[in-house]
Length: 361
Image (cartoon, one colour):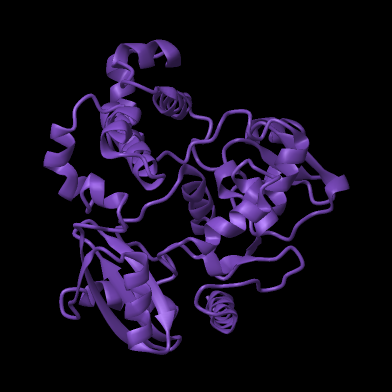
C-alpha cells in the first residue's frame, strides 16, 4: 500500500509543527521550517536540535524560504532534492487517484487527465519514480485490500470482489507468489500455509525467525527455544511448521547482525497480514531513525490521526515481526517504556544498544 499522504495532511501550522517535533520523514518535501534566531531553514525530519516554537515560521519550499532571507541547513540540505519537481507531483497525484478507485484500475488516460500530463509521459515518470507501472501499483493496492478483508473474517468470495477482483481464478494461480499463503489461509490462522523457522543465540537472547515462501512472517525474542516455537504456533495454529536452520541461515544472519548494530537499516521481504491502520502505524515505526524513539502520540500525529494514540499502541502490540518493524522504539509520552511482547527489560536493552551504536557513528 502506498505511503503517499493526503495533500492536506500538513496544511495547518499546528500539523506542520507537530511534524517538526516528531521529525517526520513523510513531511519532507511538503514544506520547510525556518528558524529566526539562526537564519536557517530545514526539512521537517532534520536531526538538528528542536527550536522554540515562537522562532519558527513555515514555507512551502526552500525557494520561498530563501526569498525571505534564510539559507539551507548544512546538515539536512533544507529539503529533499526534487521534492517539488512537477513530475513527482504528478506521480503523487496519480497514486492518490489509484488509491481512491474502488472497483477497477483507472485508465492511463484518466490518470493523465487528472495529473495534467500526457499518458506516455506519465507512464514513464511513474515507473521511474515508483519502480512499477500504474497498473502494477493498482494490483498492489488491490492485493492489500484483499488481505485486509480476509483477516477481518470475510469469506473468500466476498473478500475477492470487495477488493476489486472480478474473478478468483487468476488470483489463485498467483497466490503462492503474491500472498505466500493462499487467500483462504489468511482467514484461518495460516491453514494451508507452510512456515519454516529457525533459532539462533544473540546478545539479546534467542531469536526465532519464521518465514513462508514469500517472506518473513514472524520474529520472536526470548530465552527458551521451546517457548518461542510455541509463540509461533499460537500465531499460526493451523499452518504447517517445520524447522529449517540451514535454509533460513541468511535471514538469521541479517537479524542477528541488526541486533548487534552491524546492520541498522534491516531489509527483508515480509509476509504479514494487517489492517490498513496497522500498516500505517508500522510504516511510521519503520521511519523512526535507528537509535531514536517516538511517543505513541507522535506516531498518531505522523499518520494523521492525532486522537488515536491508544489505537497506535494496540497496533504496535499486534506487530508479528519484531525488529523488522521496530515497535520497541515506541514509548510513552512521559518517556516510560511501556509494554513489549518480548519483555520491557529486553525493550530497554534494545534501545540502549541502538543509542550506543548510533552515538558512536
